[in-house]
Length: 84
Image 1 (tube, helix red, strand yellow):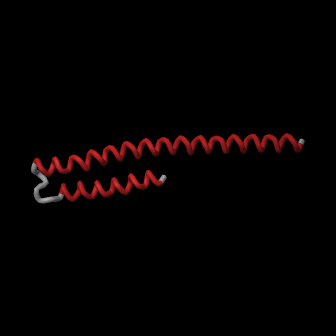
Image 2 (cartoon, one colour):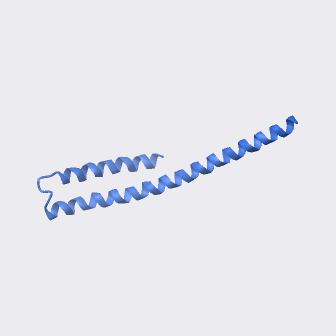
Image 3 (cartoon, helix red, strand yellow):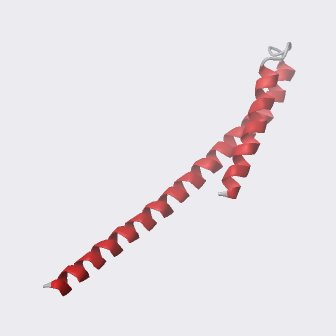
């Protein structure tokens, strides 16, 4: 989770840098476009990393919830069987 937040902060920094370059006076020049390219590529890489982290975290969360549900079903079945 800490790594995800670190990536979010870095993404925000690159986003503000790209926006500043987009609104600069020389936004149409080749040099400005090339300057914007590096932070934008880094943002794309960060987005992919965050997507992978989110998918991995989601799978782990689903597995955990599934095991909790299975445990609850087994527990309730054992309790019902003992009451008869």
